[in-house]
Every structure is written in structure tokens, then in C-alpha cells.
Length: 221
Image (tube, rainbow, N blue to C red; front, side):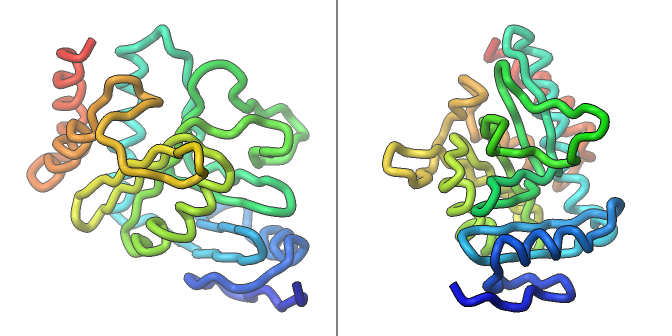
């Protein structure tokens, strides 16, 4: 591939870039602040989110709480939530998903002096990732979904923060995602129950919606 000049500013469109150019761009990002940065097979996409919007934050926090409540109700399943961490498969893929979930043993941990990223060349892939789409639904439904499929992540959720709608996908043996009605990673959790919880944001706060979810999953235990 012909080397290109990576964007000097953030861009919401995919631009050709080598992995080395991606690394230089990543190195210019400040430690603080919120950034969505993706690299997939020779293309870079980077959005400086700045301060997170109320709607995006409300939905993202709701789903973080939902994951926590699910595993409080299922303590037999060890799990770790690492949403927002930058994941890298050196030379090929990089992403910073809103939701990153590891179920079972072998989740990444950090020690002093190590890089502040999940190295997928050394660590296993997450079991589930999710993106909250406020202005990025088209990207989350297409190239970013392809990125996660290429990484081999078993389950992918997209939460549309504007329409209050959730899309859930499971990775198939042929390497593509297909819609699902029940989560395999959160065994027995109907996606419709997630949708019903999300619907409550039209009239309730995310805390109230999470309380409703906690009561609802009682019948599934």
C-alpha cells in the first residue's frame, strides 16, 4: 500500500494509513479526554468526542450498569468490564469500544509501567463489545462491525442513542455477524429485555431504568 499522510485533525471518515502512521497519530492524542480511534486493514478513523453528550453518556452508563447487575445476579460467572480501553491487534486492528466485556478467566490486567492499552497479540479477545451510536450509527453498523468480526469477537451490540434501539449480533463460523434474539455471552438474557429497558429512557432516568431491569431479571434466575 502506498504510504499516505494521516489526518492532522480528527476525522469521521476512514482514511488510508499505515500502521506506523496510526501509531504516530495515536501518540499525538492527549492522555486525558475521550477519543474514538479505529484502525482496520490499512484505514484509520478517529473522532475527538470532546465532552461526552448527555444522551450518549446516559445510554452508555445504563448499559454499564446493566452488565454489572447481570453479573451480580450471576456471581458464578467471573467477569470484567473494560469499556473505553483502546484495544490493538498490532499491525491490523485497533478500536476503543464503549463497552468491552470479558467473561471467565484470562481478562487483561494492568501493572505499573505497562502500556495503557489492551494488547490483543498477548491478551485474549473480549467476549462482547458494544458501541453507543449518537452520531455514528452508519459506521457502527458497517465498517466497525466488520472490524470486530475480523478480530473474532463473539458478540457485538450497537445501541442507537437517538432512536433508543439495540441491535445485537453473534459471530458465525463464516466470520460474519448475524442478528440474535438472546445473548449467548450473557446466557439466557433476551435482547428484547434490553430493548424494554432502553425504552424506559423516554420517561425515566438511567438509574430508574436499571432498577426496572434488576427486577425484571429476577424471573430469569
